[in-house]
Image (cartoon, rainbow, N blue to C red; front, side, top):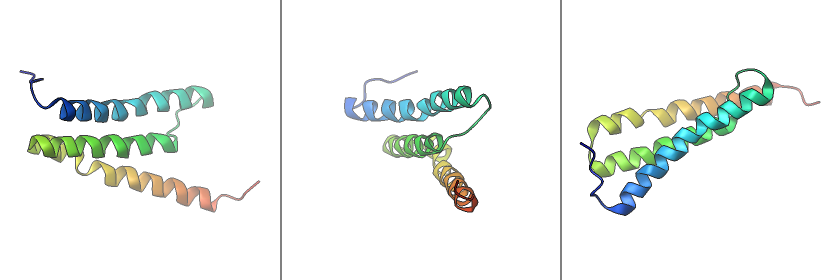
Length: 95
């Protein structure tokens, strides 16, 4: 059963995290349509980190271990993707 009776500020914070996390798919779709192929733009990973951290904080507030474990490792993977993108761009010659 859904419980919307909690603190409205925390509920809004959790919904914000969900919106940020979900918006990355819209960004990825638009970037792919523009490129005519599937791409993962840098902002996709930034939104992934932001959304995951917000949702992790919200999960910690709720004290829900399943929810915490679902978001705890994500930011490390997303940050690694940003690092790999930066490394690849640094190796590419400038035009």
